[in-house]
Image (cartoon, rainbow, N blue to C red; front, side, top):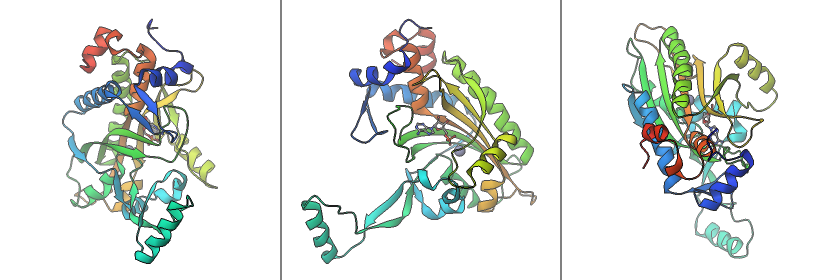
Length: 305
Ligand code: AMP
Ligand code: ZN
């Protein structure tokens, strides 16, 4: 244990006091200072290096509602979705809105759901983009993506943000190549975290599905070992936080967007997702608030300062 390590209960207060990660009035939405941002960017750089050879694509923090619908998101995670609503009224409606606004009443009535939603995971906009290219080449595609994600899960736990950033490496290709990619990345991600001086635990996991089918979906996901999580102690020593996940989608997404291999075989997909703030928080927890007191190998590895 590093002498500068923070107890779990001290992580959020210490970061807030130091001005590194400061809460706003909305739970799970933070102000990050240059030190936090430097660590997040350093982790992102290190992941990028690990994914050398992958094509790089960047998407907006919003994506077409139609594309998310096609992936079936609304069936599984309606409770996590952030939807973009915009004022679409005329001047009469604007006057009514202003009266409500100035009187302190609810003035959101004139907002209508737009054709955009907030991106819930960095890889979601990728599948439609790849489908637009036609059939996958023999070796498939391997793409590195990074972006702002939104999930409606307000919490005071600094590791559970509503707005956070995720870096993913995604492979779309023949079923066996995709399975191998996912399994390889469980090990690569584990070594990556160990290389940063962290001690992850690898677990089979399931997603927080919504509604009546949730129990069945969770069980199926676990028995088929579709999702692995790499967990670290961040804001609790009893309940470790998933900082990286490695997911096998089988043909769930590829089928939805009509992605095939050139020989007509069905394509599969898998992704490994790094929660950049979560890895950063695990580092602050393990080595303390002051970056210049972090162990030399970790600083060198991340090239911070
Ligand atoms: P998931 O798609 O749920 O497997 O998420 C991929 C990765 O994003 C996780 O392993 C976390 O590191 C990160 N992540 C998920 N939800 C949050 C959140 N609410 N706040 C911060 N990071 C998150
Ligand atoms: Zn993904």
